[in-house]
Image (cartoon, rainbow, N blue to C red; front, top):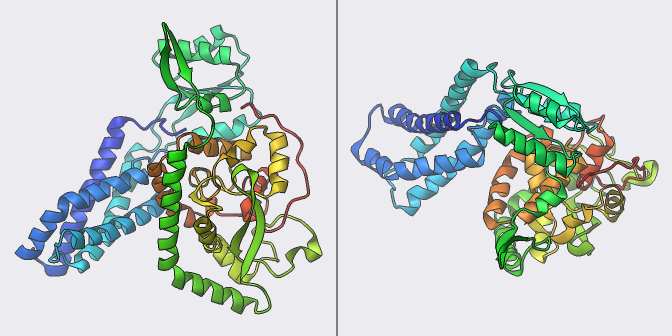
Length: 471
């Protein structure tokens, strides 16, 4: 669910409010720095102002700072603002050099960054104070899925508690559904509803001017990007094979090679630092941990990570899952896992061509075989290169189930573009600082464990009872 309650007027108000906060932050920074507005410095600022606001608008959109009624807490909002403001500051300084506006003081930019965070947080808190608790809408949830309670919890946003949800069975008569449609604003259709029922519900909802949200099946995901063409006097839809075309593969590979090479040069001091502390923590152990994963078209490759567990972690316990309080994880290992620094050596995998910067996370053969039996479309993930980060990682959480992560991965493959990769890379900064997206809780369910197999250093031997995925 991405748009319930997010009316255009609310978005426009929040975006304009954030841009005014950015403008006020720079004015305040000038006053704090100079107690005045020196002509030469002020002229440089005015020349850069359109670019400052454009950069601000870009990151407001990327990090969706206008989406306050999603399932976010105040700390989530602050985290987004901090990351967005940091990147705004970096690009503003770069713009001042690019456009040769050297009179724009760096001190003003840095002071403005602090004011920017403060003003934007205050603005959003005040906004929530006046809007929280208001009724966003009445939602009609139609389906028979066993995890309906989880869906209801996802629909009810804690930041705006007025959302009301009514759940009815997918087997209900169309007359009963039509009656319920009268008293709702939005409709959510689960995957276990027949195509005929979906068609009827959507038709009746459109007749009543209601918004319908459909949890997509694979069939519906495949229809995305379908080409429309006439076959003489008959309209047909052309569904392309699942994967990337040769030109997209070429563009993606060039971007991966250049970006990974540049990143390896820039972060080489950080990687050296991590290697040193890993070695100091366990002098007898290896710095780099390697493991076989399956890549594109199920081709095996060796993935690299900084070692975060003791040497011979499975000798005593056998093949078991890692948890957040696992005593096999070293002290340094806990830190590099929580900050995702253990993943940095995978840039060499990207440089070699085994992986991409963005794509579905690579899994072990054990997991792929097991999950392919349960979810028969799971193998579609391996139609592209696996990635260090992915759409499922930035949109989901560690606790997100396999089925939902699979949908995100398949959506990414079907809708790939270089621009989407850039957006995912920028959103990955949030993942690093978000504990809910990091690995491990002590009571992690099997769905959690399987949905992030890449975060484990030993294979799982237990199996889960088969479940049906209606894709």
